[in-house]
Image (cartoon, rainbow, N blue to C red; front, side):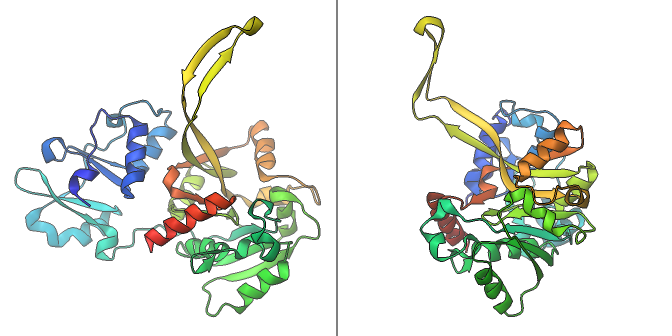
Length: 349
């Protein structure tokens, strides 16, 4: 990748910046007029800006860090030390004129800046997976392969990278196949305890089977969502905001492929928009949850977890959002999305 591909104009909108972050596959961009470092913008800076009430149309200079860490070329050997000291993902190396000569990425110097979470993970793995039929006529959705591993194993591997080694899996459809697969895995770095769902209770209802088993904050995930996110940072955010539930949401940008007509009274045309663009936050199906939520669930009630969240929101309880970029979310809930996920994982391999 050329350095110029990581440059962004400070008057570019937040939305344009998010798109560029997605295109580059990196988590950092530089405001560098004529190559000279002026400011740095990370996905974390964007998230903090949006959480403060910023919007997607505002210029990126409102969110950028104008006092970034950097090193002169002569001190390049200290890059690993600085990356570790400040817990950053990338470090610009500057020449005598203050121009960016190179960028040292943490992943390239064997520095692991991921924050550890170390809390339990609950995976809802009991659904029929009807949107992935006919695959799910043969295999339960958690065992559908995405590359060399089933989706559920990939999900647990990601959580394990952040110290999450205690797993509870709610199972129902083809549950014996799921248990057999994970029980036969050799040297898996996590322990799984199963909760058998006798009847389908939905993504929220199934949690009632874990009453009395969860005594700490936990991650709660569907079995068809793979996120490229710092789960340690998500956990810290959840605790810092004293949330009862934190929902991880992805920004989506969608262009309607048609001209949209607004109709007024008596069939009159009130307005027209040609291929309007929509920007919105989408629930990824991954959450951070306090154990109180499980204990307060009604036994045997079929309900989705968003319904549980809405109940607490209406009651004025602290429920919040941790926003991520669209490219950080891979979902295999439908056939075409499954193929996209496979292609992306092949590119990352």
